[in-house]
Image 1 (cartoon, rainbow, N blue to C red):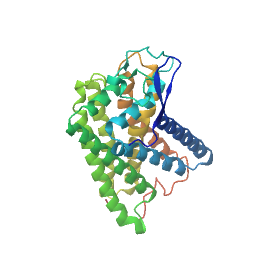
Image 2: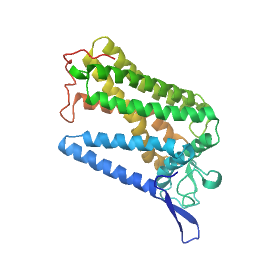
Image 3: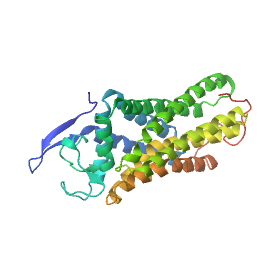
Image 4: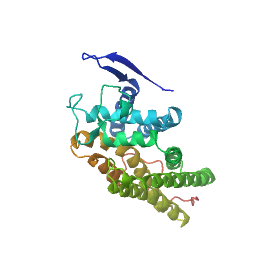
Length: 310
């Protein structure tokens, strides 16, 4: 099943190519999202921007369970094909670009025959990989999506007053989900030393580092609330949110920018995203926490009057 599909047409050279409408719709959604960000910066209201971002995240992740891994990864690669082939002829390659069997690793058909080498390896590893690897990917996506959505509910519905018990229960569910999602991620990363297109050992260690930033901030959020430090708890949960946004969205945005710039260096673009997306997300979240861009729902600097449980 494909949600939006594609259309075929014949180019001037007689090559059958696809118009990947699902990628074009995704680009349109991102343009609208940037518009919401501009609106938020002007009006100091970022709720619509965050909610729309969560919707896009959920749709992108959900399609793995609807369309399957191979089709969803081909869509993911198709997003970068447009940028990584900028300025290149159809048959012109680069050290960071590679071809895949039957050109099945993209939703663009024969429009692009060269793709980011990490994407070709990503597609092949899950198209032809063992069931365990595929199940780990499903588990990582499923549990991290739950944790990501629950995190934002917690931030907008702090555990004070009537929300206290609900906050505690959802917090436990969220922490359990990120624990399982991180285990799946680390398990998959343990194989990456053998994947040269990812960057080999540097990629493996980088994914371990990403997991440490995400899970480490979550653990600190739990430790502070159990110690009765509500102000510290909110600080660490905001940092945790930053790591999650970084690991998902900054990771992907950075690939758009660095892919075309570093296509003469295999795996350089991916390694930059792996190593720097999560910590950069934390830095941005910390900057927002210290100098709020909008009036917060609750005071992020002073302790709440009621203890929040986890």
